Image 1 (cartoon, rainbow, N blue to C red):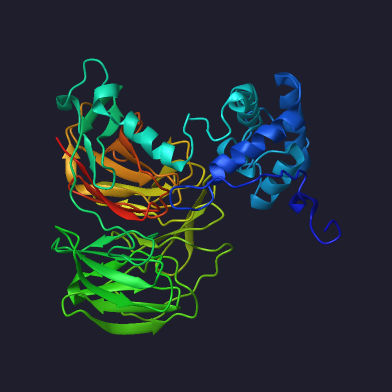
Image 2 (image 1 turned 60 degrees about the vertical axis):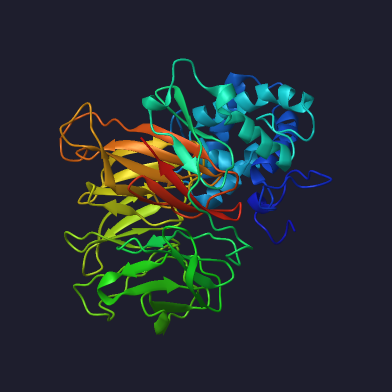
Amino acid sequence: MADKLPLAMIPGHIVVTESFPVSSSGKINYELLADSVFAKHVQDGLGDVGSSNLLQLVKTAFKDVLSVEEISDDDDFFTMGGNSIAAAHLSNNIGVDMRLIYCFPSPSMLCAALLERKESLNIKVSRDANQDESGRGNEDNAIISKRLKLDSNINVAGGSSPANGYPWNSVAICASCSFSRCNKVVYEGGSMWFCPVGDKLEGRVECSAAILSDFTQVVVGCYRGKIYFLDFLNGNICWTFQTSGEVKSQPVIDSRRQLIWCGSYDHNLYALDYKNHCCVYQLPCGGSIYGSPAIDEAFPFSILWLHELEAPVFGSLAINSLNGNIICCLVDGHVLALDTSGSVIWRYRTAGPIFAGACMSSALPFQALICSRDGSIYSLELETGDLLWQYNVKDPITSSAYVDEHLSLVSDRSNLPDRLVCICSSSGSVYLLRVNSGVAKVANEPIDVEEFSRLDLVGDVFSSPVMIGGRIFVGCRDDYIHCITVKA
C-alpha cells in the first residue's frame, strides 16, 4: 500500500470495533463513529501536550502541508491555498478527523477544538458504552430522549407562553415540538399529513419536493426511480411515473407548458404533464443527473455556449432573472457567476465543499444564498459576488436554502419587512433564519441575521426544504416526508 498510495491516504491508526453505530434509518452514524475513534486517537496522539505546544505543532503541520514559510494563528487553511487533498494530508499529519479542518480551518480554532475534545474525553470514556455525548443510548432510546426533551410539561421555560413565538408542528414526530427564540421555548402539538416510505412511497427521498403554482400537488422523486404526484392537502398519491434510475434532483415546475421537468440517474431528463398525467419528452443527457434543470423562457431550447469548469457541479444552476446571469456552485467550494455568453463575471470561495445550488428569491433581492458543508450559509451580492452576511449553524449543510416569499415579519429596525430563510443541516436540524429584505440596499448598515427557530428531526436530511406561507416540506432519512408548519 505504501508504494501505491500517497502518504496522506495511508491509515495512521487502525481501530478495532465490534459494531458500527447506526442512525434511525439503519445507516452508519458517522458522527458517533468519528467520536469513538477520535477519543482513542486523541488520547494516543495528544497525550499531555499543552495548549501552547499544541498550537505550535498545528502551525508547523499547516506550514508543511501548504509549503509556506510563515502562518499566523488565525490564517485560514483554505484561503492560504489548501484544498481537499491538502486537508487529507493535514489530517493525516496531525492525526485528526478531516472534517475538523473544514469546521475549524485556522490553527487557533483547530487547537481550541482539539483541547476542548481532549478535556471532554474523560467524561465520555466514563459513560456507558451505548451512550453518546448527548446522553442518548441506542437508537430507540434516542427517540425517547427526543420526545422527553419536547415534552411541554418538562421543558417549558419560565415565563414563556405560546403567545411569545411561533410553535412548530411536525407530522412525523408524535410528540410536541419546540424551538427557541430569544431564549424562550414554545410548544405545540398537532399534525397535517405525512407519506411514510414503504406505505405509500417505495424508496427513500433525498431530493426536494416541488409544489405546483395552484397548490394542488406536491411532486417528489425517490431512490426507486419513481416520481410521485401527491395531493397537497392530504398527501394522497395522484399519479406516479417510473424512471429507470434513482431520482435525486428536485423537479422543476414549467407552468406555461403545464410540465414537470425532472432528471434521473438513468441519464434522461423527463418532461411530465402534471394535468394529463403523461410523459411528453424524454431527453437523453449522456450521464446521471444530480441537479435540477433551470428554465430560461427568453431563449429557445438549444445550446448557446459551453463552459468547462475545473470541478464537478452537484447542485442546480440558478438564473438571475434581471440580467440572465447564471450562478453555479462547484463541489470544491467555488461559486461562479457566468454572463449570457458563458464568461466568468466573478467568483467566490467558501470554506467547504458545496453540494447544492444557489437560492435566489424576489423576497431577498440582489442576494444569492449559498449553503456549504462547512456549516455556513453565505449571502453573496449578485452583481459583484461580495459577501453580505454569513451564518454558521455548526453542522454540515448539503442542501439548498429556501426563502418563504409568502410570509413576511414586521422589522424592528427597518421599514422593509423581515423574511424567513429555511435551511436544513445534514444531521436533521431544520433552521429558520430571520433576515431583513433590505439588507443589500442600505450601504454600511449593520447586518443582523438571527436564528428565528429550530426543529430537530429524527433522521438525517440531505434534501432541500420548500417553504410556502409558513409551511415547510422536506424529505428525511427517517423514511418520511415531513410537512412542518409555523403557527402564530
